[in-house]
Structure formats: structure tokens, C-alpha cells
Length: 226
Image (cartoon, rainbow, N blue to C red; front, side):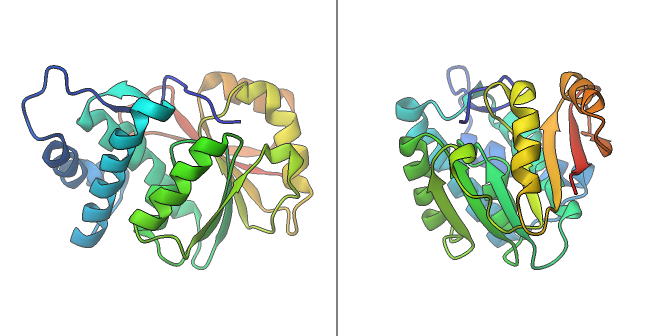
């Protein structure tokens, strides 16, 4: 059920003569404070490995669209890690439309106490997700389900996250109903813009928007569904 949206990207090396991994890591280190994120050397190394895996698999699976290492570090990895301050210790998360692993793989790397179920409709992308969990040392934290979310019984979890899914706003009522079938119902954590805010208002859902750093229109929405 995942799709390629403008907000998701990987690096474009066509005009870059600098080591992209070094640029990616340096950007994480220099910009993490903007996102109130703290990363250890070990976590930075594993995020760099994840970045390399995206680049390796992307020509075959089109996991993400091209952009610079700096943009991948900030708009995608660091924005994904903003999820963490909404997640208490020992939290269980269900991520739907996991695609290339954003937001949940970086979150698992940064927080070994989190457990996650990654639901991805594309079997090939699900294979990538399994490999990403294995190679980044987070396999014990995550389970990958290769299916459309609506064909899966909602796993027990405290939160449901979603960052990139085709026809997001159109599917939102279905996502909300699916989330309410979980035990406990928990909360939704959705990444989106003004169009998602309008849809949330139309469904009369209670939510709190958090504006992404250096952005005027990208938000992380925390939504009560109980």
C-alpha cells in the first residue's frame, strides 16, 4: 500500500563529488539539535548503513525518489525521529505502508526499547524491510507483514504510524476504523500537510499538529482514535 510521494527521497550523486555517506552523517550530527534528537556514534553508524541499503536497493524497487544526502538526513531521517518524543518506553508501534522503512527503521535504530510491526503491501519491498532490519541490528525489534493493512487483523499496539501511503487522505477513514479495532485503540501518528489537516477536520478527529523544523507546511499529527 506504500507509494512514492514527494516528501520521501534518497540521494542524487550526479553532481556530487563528495562521499555521500560522510555528507549524510555530518548532516545528522550538525542538524540533529534542530529536531531535538541525540544520536550516539553507534546509532549514527547504523543510520549510515540504512542509508547505504536504500541506495543499493532503490534502482530495483524505487523505494524513494532522488534528493541530496543532506535532504535525506534532515527531511526524512531526522523528521522520522521526531516520532520518538511521542513514544514512551517499551512502546509497541504498528507502521502501515512502511515502504522504504521511514519512519520506523530510524526509530528502531535510535530506540532499542521499541517494538514494531511493519505492514507493507509490496512483497518485494517487504523483503527489503526484512533485510534492513537484519542489517541494522533491529530484527529482534521488528516484524514485517507483507499484506495490505486492511487485510490484516490490527496488531495490539500503543501507536499506529504512517508516513507515505498512496491515496493517504482517501484512505484515512479506513485507517481510523482499522486502528479502532486494535486492543488498546491507542493513537495515530501521521505525517502530512495541510490537506491531511483538512481531512482530519472533516472527520471531526481530535489531533495535535507539530510543525517540522524549517518547514511551513509539513506536520506530525498525533490523533486520538479511541
